[in-house]
Length: 323
Image 1 (cartoon, helix red, strand yellow):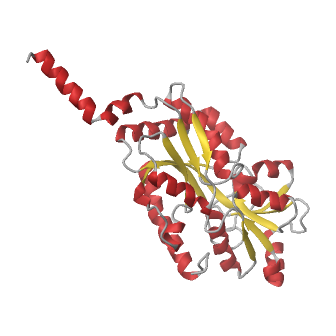
Image 2 (cartoon, one colour):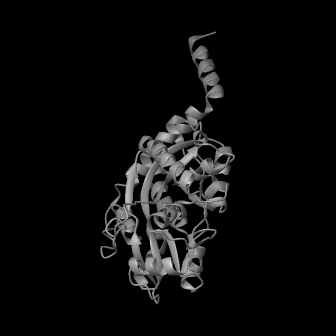
Image 3 (cartoon, rainbow, N blue to C red):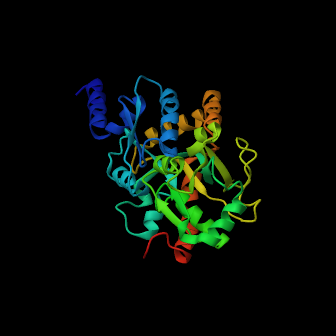
């Protein structure tokens, strides 16, 4: 066999047994699905639809990123689907922390954290406490006093049992010594609709979730669970200012199934990092009240360890579902 034929034979064999290494060079060559484990119109869905065209642009080519909603189980349905998806880079998922962690603490879901490859965090969406524009409550202190007197007759909506907003609000209720009727909805959009319709007296959502309604004056924010006031809503106090040493909310980013080709994963991580530097994206993020909080994949993974400990402590002291 000639030298040329020998080389061609080796190359053919390499292509046969290592297809992903060649595919990674041209990735993506077809459209990508971005799975969202929450309903359309909620904060995670809004973020996904906002970032999809920017990531698509950073990846290059003509391929589209299509948002697919898989609501249910506070994200568990989508996370389970991701754990079983092909690790070819064409099925990605939004990931909410601690939302992805809490099912693991409370029961045995059909996924574990090592079923995923983290790609980077995009925002921190602090939990905020909202009332309707016509509510009698102008301050959080007024609401707390009322809730202490009326207890379970006070109805508060949240985007889903065991999610970031629900669990962070439970921590606040413990600190405030309040016990209310905490009502889970299938996503923030439905909780927001119930608040706007006057069916509940208050709601806890991510700050960005009600951005449009806050700007239009339909919803009032009583407090936000962040270290500092949001520069986007500088008049809204933090819980820390009001005497509650609490920070809580949802870290939102992206992940892929485990065993994704390392070159494909790095290309995706690079696209996310470049998006975070795009002035057009940062301007749109400000408009939507997104609090940008970029983390590398390694930082994102480290965050799961911290949040797992925090949520385990909450579960031990005040489980968010009956054991």
